[in-house]
Image (cartoon, chains in turn blue, brown):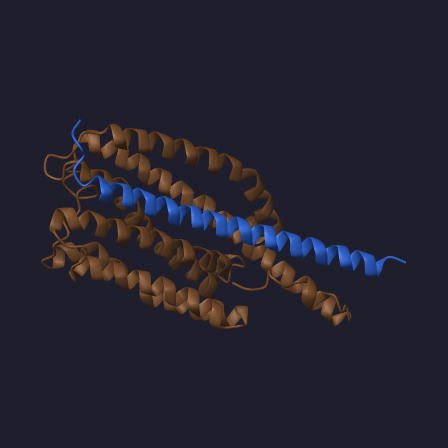
Length: 52
Length: 253
């Protein structure tokens, strides 16, 4: 079996691209979860304070 | 476009679109990667040509996203579209991410092909300048507290930075560069063999759909961040002592 020339460079390029894309997706999803949770807490607190 | 100015309409549209976009993006990536790894090696580059299937789409996106930001900047300064500054702010980190992929994968291709990771030629340097402009825009958004002032400042900087786009595109024609000239979008047609061109085009489409999906998600986050800021201010004005505590962790960026 012949080794693919420069395989290390190819794997590094794909690995790094995948990592950066995953970090972008994760950070946007994490931000969304944090914002949704904060909004839900604030709206719940406002609902409680408005209740008789 | 008029309807999309309403954040509630935009959020509803995003909710419906995102699952389909995610599905199409995943399918295109699967197809593109399968074709890329089944494609024959290039007669000069050998198997190293496989790096092109991530490098070239990332390079295209790096300038395309800047074009989107320039349009959004016009939307902020000229048409005063309510979501234009959110679109501009949301695109900057994505532009930086794809430009970073372009620079590093290009470097990883350059070492075996050119014998060096980096040269200060016109194409590489102008793309590095683009990356620095993206970082500058992210820093600008974070350093100005008033969102209106930040949006106007970022829009002006974005439009000034547009001068770099033709420099990137034509740098390989205007100067002697180590980087090869255009081989896909050129007057005489592509110079790439179809077996290598099709995987490249499919990967480019996959990257573009990925950007569209991520951009919609990031704009949605900006809308929620503004809603949270507004509600926090209302709660504070009403004397709600809980408000600052409730907003913790979701007020940055």
